[in-house]
Image (cartoon, rainbow, N blue to C red):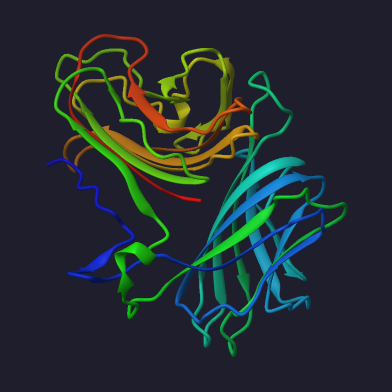
Length: 348
């Protein structure tokens, strides 16, 4: 059976739904070293989107302006061995200087410690000839008496550029609101049953993009890894992409100045009868390189076969256009996919 992709941000029926709703955001109108989002409604879960421009030091997360030694974290930088740190006065979220896109999930029950899952995609040096960097972090705020009502983002030194921002989304199982109030709005959806590529229709470009896709290879497929391309109006097939990825926990691999990003969608479907699923985010500023974060899984049918996994970051080295079209393809090999679907959501 094919995977079922639904809008994971809508629940309920009729005119009242629940989902990720924007609670607040702070966007810098000038350079600064702190970005605080305050006065947050008490929600069970937060999703935090950070669009960080030209930060020269480490990005730090705090809650409720607590700068005591009440935080700990475990992290891996560029797929390296885990590092732990305890009794800290913040949770560090990034690896390198330069533009960053960081996606956090935060659990927020007042009576238990607050847990954080974070992924960052970091530009590194500009241009497709330079791979992005990545960081995976889990952290916690050891507070068991207060709900989060502030999310504080600061730098260990230097300042953020104008336009850097933090957007906080909230979700609670009891929420109901109009569908139009959901942060993530569907931009396009496409299904197919044959062929070796699928291209979405052009969609209204948004600053933040969330995409999901699944596809299955046919019985005669051979040597055909999947890949991702993007573009503005038309797909960019030039050597304007770079990526960093790990497959099944292996050391990171990098690809630079390439015409597609195959690590970003799994990199592991080179056999027949393989089913694939990918989940990714993009920060999509016209004047900045586009940064990607993606997790994928792939494997043969049946419980006797173990799925593979990949974690990846990528970038499209275009600084003049926003993405408004996405393509999945098999850049080499032979045979066809036999089913698939791509959905894209977004918001400015």
